[in-house]
Length: 213
Image (cartoon, rainbow, N blue to C red):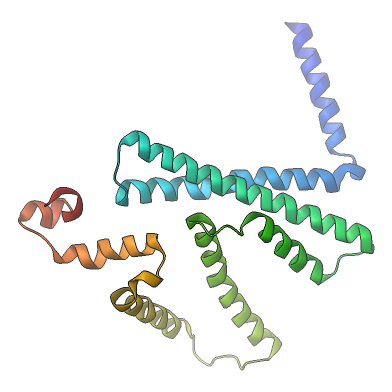
């Protein structure tokens, strides 16, 4: 047993020494990017899938758990694969041109997305919409920083959020089919299901869709 412990410590020292070598740093960074993408994807998707599945999906417990596991795996794998591809292409371009330039990151992400996120499924759609909302804010701030548009004298957030809520509820009421299914489910629960009840049980305790006929 003592010999096994000594062998393990020697192996651990050898691995740590390898990880500290600068010549392998770029390749190892790509591998760690894959690891971090997988972990982050699982952390983000698992609780979201858990809540949405038990709130809005019907079926047996086994079916629900399977759905959660599949969604978590897909998100985790896609993000890991994308980070691996992006960092690999960034390293390759830098190696070929001898330096890093801004276009590299756009090209690497563009190609990585074509490889990983091109399938139109609920998870990829959610990721894309999440990023779209943030780049709109980011581009707006960049336009102000660069002087392309004047800096607002008052915080524009109240107007922006009012505009967003106004548009999304208009779409929900009159063009519901244009919204993503999970958003439709959430809004149906909030705005449609709250119009229906039969007694105190489905007014305060239960929602009509699962407990009332």
